[in-house]
Structures are given as structure tokens and as C-alpha cells.
Image 1 (cartoon, rainbow, N blue to C red):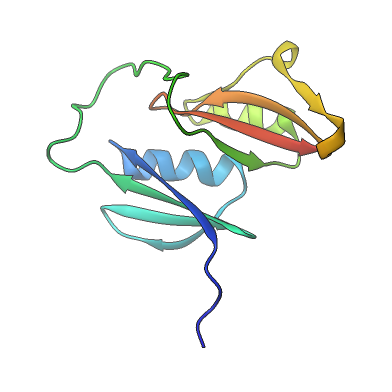
Image 2 (image 1 turned 45 degrees about the vertical axis):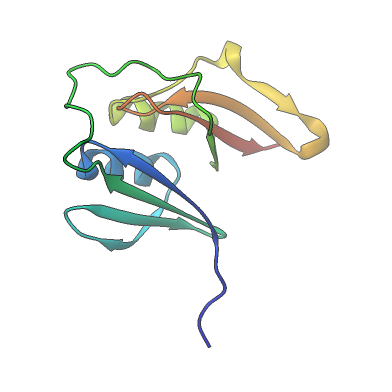
Length: 128
């Protein structure tokens, strides 16, 4: 019998190695499988596929616009928002400043948004 399916998401990107390193460092994700076109990252209960855009994809940009109005935002658990902020910056992204953090006491976490090196907005969540 195969393992149960996990909740998963796919992010389409220009640079698979760079974006793999970003998400792997941001949320302590393990590489499950990798090739030149995609990498599957995993934390307990969630898989994230970093997938290369096809030949009809966007041209690589020197600076990607932050797409805060996209239809999906990935929320990732982290041990420390401050550490995630440092990791994101070291890998070309950003977790917004502490003034933009907020608590969801009833759901048990503190959260802050940020963006990856290609402008995709995400959220990190630290247990209260």
C-alpha cells in the first residue's frame, strides 16, 4: 500500500535551483526529488513542488514585481519568524518587518507575509 497523499502546492518559476534553495532554507524543507525541471520539497503534512515554467513562460526578469494580489498564498510553519526573515533575505526574498506581524491567538500562531525572489507572496507562521 502506498503512503497517504499530502496537501501540496506547485509554484511555477524561472529558476528552479534558486527557488528550491529559497524555500528549502525558509521553512526547513527536505528535498524529496529533484531534476532540472522541478524539485519536490516536503515538511510533515505538506509538499511544495518548484516547477520550471515552460518555454511559453515569462522571460527572466532582473527584478520581479511583488504580486500581492495573486489568488493563492502559501502559508508555511517556521520555528522563528525572525530567523525566516534572515533566511529569506540571504536567499533573495523578504519577510516583511516586525511591525507587519500579527497574532491569531485563537488559532495559535503569529504570522507575517513576505515574498520570494520571483515576487510570489507567502506567509510564515510561528507557534505562539
